[in-house]
Length: 186
Image 1 (cartoon, rainbow, N blue to C red):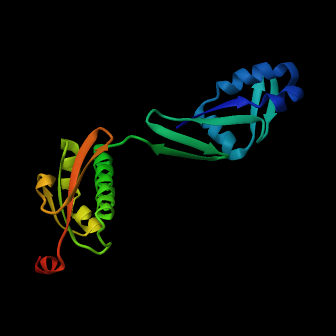
Image 2: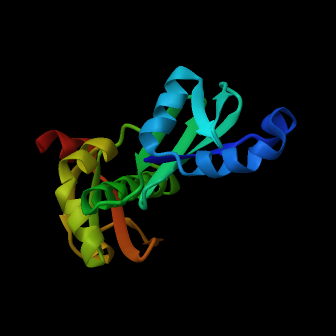
Image 3: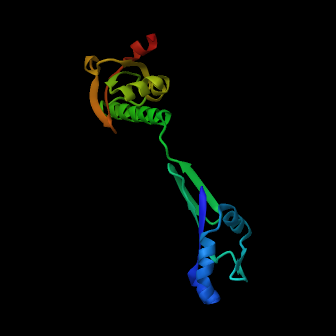
């Protein structure tokens, strides 16, 4: 994160008169270290045309400039930067979360009780299949699934099946309630 500064002309103009133009040029060429020191101390002394100019805490407007791929916000002397790059790991986690959400929606649509154990069959595009496989234990736990199989959901006897678009990915999920007796034997 880098910072830039510019004079607050509404404050400095009346005080400095014609000197404000030269102060502006000097302030806009300040390096990050000097700007950071100004933010910490709340004051800065510049020599402009042989004159010392004292700048107080409200005389400069300091802005944080982000780095590509980062979201940067500043309030007062606090700057927060957030890396907005979606890594393959984050993408897979997001796809897995979306698979859980869609499965829970299907459970509700099928009229299952919250405590019902289910069987899930799924297929889809490569990335979503990989994401579901990588997070299979978590998905089973979140959905109360006794089985999570990569297979044709239409072959799931007595199941509810739906196909979803998740961004550029496609996922078909089938859910079937597992009878309590069947659940006990697993």
